[in-house]
Length: 162
Image (cartoon, rainbow, N blue to C red; front, side, top):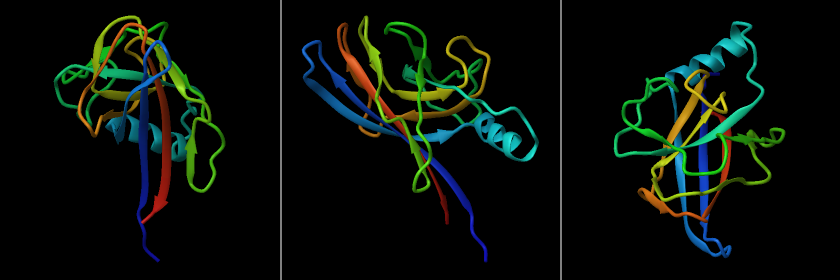
């Protein structure tokens, strides 16, 4: 028997105005970074310490995403920070049916205007150290958010043998 192991993720976004009305929805299929893939291999096969908390950040800018991107070096994009607090924790539930996701949305309360390109998952709530697991650009193009909007995010990782 021969098969490959596939691990893929998808961000789903809903943008709501200050009155709770849906402004737009979008999705972003992630591309794992080289650093993220090395982290998986090191944790499972080289006794590296498991990362127990992951954080979602927002991507802005006009450049491209790259597999070589890290938190410290990502020339093709910038991190969007016009929301309250640090990167927000992705609180995942237990895996079921080869999938793992957050039961409650991760809500970004926007404090300014920005054009969002997509999202990323990292092991750090702030700063440029830590593991950048993946980046993802919206499938429907960049989206504008304004002061008072709330971005509600769900991230799902699925594993499959192909």
